[in-house]
Length: 238
Image (tube, rainbow, N blue to C red):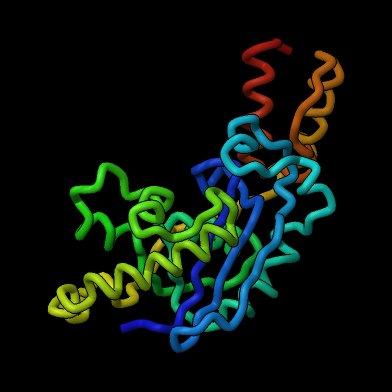
């Protein structure tokens, strides 16, 4: 049984670690069954949030103003994580975003994890939904939906409920038990910054077509810049 871990949750601009960015990190550290620390921070995504993300998370652009960049946050956050196992509801999603950010900063980030969603899918098949929100309602766990620290707290509480109810049965699976930490695997490729010619072309196109964009040009990667240039050319021409 794993009673020491860090439960993590991220809020992001979307679902794709290759294109989207972290906007909030929440984490709860549990050691020998007791909460020993919490972590919560906003992250500057260098772009304005889409309406659907604002509606989903309740996070607004004003709240992210002045937030640190992910490059400034990662070293301290990784120190908080230490060598602990990661716990999460669909933990690979959160790990993938952190792994991508780490690779971009040339940091090593290898972890083992436990996924409460996988456990719920195995043992709570009769439930209509096994989302964190639905499972919290099922178990009567207080939960402020779609905020990183609140989700992390709720996931930690959910883990204990699942452990109490299903550990004895799952223990028979030995090392393959879903309650045993397993390596988290996500292949991430380091992004390269946009080139000077890309930057110059973007500024020229924006000026020519009198366009206002909702992202910081200087923060774009080469692939993002290429995608933005192609979209402008397709819609407005040269």
